[in-house]
Amino acid sequence: MKWRGCAGCWGRWELWGCRVEDCGLEYGEVGVKGLRCVWVHESLRAEALGRLRRESVVSGRVDHMLHYVSTRQAQLWMEVHRKHAPLFEDAAFGRIFQDCARELGGELVGRAVHVLGLGAGGGAKEAIVLGQLKAAGCELRYTPVDASMELAIGSAEAAFAGEPGLVEPERVQPVVADLRALQAVVDALDAEEPGTVRVYTAFGLAPNFEPEEFFGLIRAVLRPGDVLLLSANLAPVACGEEGEPEAVRVACERILPQYANAETGEWLRQVLVDWGCGEWAGPVEFGLGAVGGVPAVRARCRWERGGELVVEGVPLRVDAGGVVELFFSLRYTPGLLAAVLGRHGMELGRGFIAPNGEEGVWRVRVAR
Ligand SMILES: C[S@@+](CC[C@H](N)C(=O)[O-])C[C@H]1O[C@@H](n2cnc3c(N)ncnc32)[C@H](O)[C@@H]1O
Image (cartoon, rainbow, N blue to C red; front, side, top):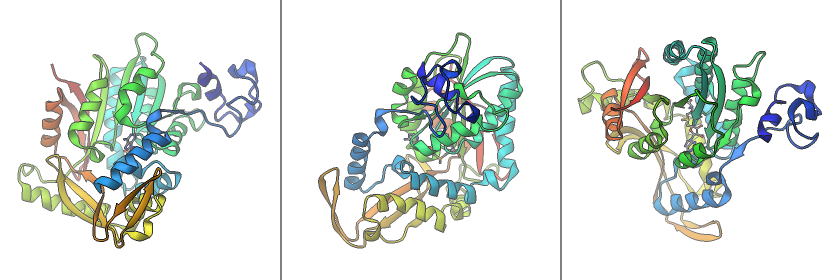
C-alpha cells in the first residue's frame, strides 16, 4: 500500500528525496519533507459539512463536530485543553490512564496490537496507552481517527515523534472522518495481520455525544476479542450520593469554571465567526442542564441581530433574540454510564477514577 511507504519517511528527514528503495515511492510523489499522508473520509468533505451546517442553523443547535473542523478551531481547542484540562495540571489524571493501560499491557505482552484512537484530539492519552503497550513488548499499529485534520495529524505525530518513537512511522495512519461513519471507516482499513488484537480508545468523547447515538456507534464495530477503553467526565459527587439529583447538581456547579472561561467561549464562538456571523451573536452563556437523561454543562448564545445567512447557496433566516445551542458536555456518574452501556449490550469492566472524582477510565466488555 502506498501510504505505508510514504509514512516511512515521516520524521526521518535524512530521507529527504524519498528514494524508491527506501519507501517504495517515486521521488516527489508523496512522503517528501513537509508532507503528511492522511486519509479523508467523505463525511468530512464540503458537501457533508455543508449539510451539517445547514441543519445546525435551521435547528438552532450547532452540531458538535463543527467545533473542531477548521484549523483555527483546532488551535483554540488545544489552547482550552492545555489551560483547563485537568490532565495537564494534575498528575493523578494521567495516572488513571497509565494504570488502565499498564494492566492492558500486562495481558497483551508481546502481542500484535492495533490501536484505533477515536476522537484522539492531541493524542496525549493515546500516547500513554501506546507507551504502556510498547513497554509490554507489543508490536504496534496506530490509527487515530478525528474530525479535525490538524488533530488527527497531531496525534499521529505524538505517536512517532522522538527517537525512538512509540510506533514505527509506517505503522501510523491518521484518518479524518466523522465518527458517525465509523463502521465505514473501519471496513475500509487494511485487515490486521492474523492474531492482532484491536484496541479502541474513546477518551473524552462520550461527553460530546448524545448517549444513545454514541454507544450505538461503538457497539456496532466491536467484534469478539476487541478491547474498548472508554473515559468519561464525571459529576464529582461524594460516595453514596450519586443517586441524589441535588448532590449531582452541586457537583456539576463545582466544575462549571472548567467551561465558563474566556478560552472556551472564544473556541465555541469560532464556529459562528467561520460562518460569517460572529458579530450577530451575543456572549456565550454557560449553565447546567441534561441531555438524554445525563447531567450536562451547556453553552448557548443569542442572536443579537437577525439576518439572512447564506449556507451552501441556501439563504437561511435567523431572528434577533433566537437562541443558538452551541455545545454540551455530559457529566456521567459511574451508575449512569453503566446503565447507558447496558442498553447497548455492554458493561463496565475494571475502572480507574481520578481521586477528585472528575474523570474515570474503564475497560468495557460486551455483555454475555
Ligand atoms: C473533547 S475532545 C477529546 C480529545 C481527546 N481524546 C482527549 O480526551 O483529550 C473531542 C475530540 O473528538 C473529535 N470529535 C468530536 N466529534 C467528532 C465526530 N463526530 N467525529 C470525529 N471526531 C470527532 C474532536 O475533533 C476532538 O479531537
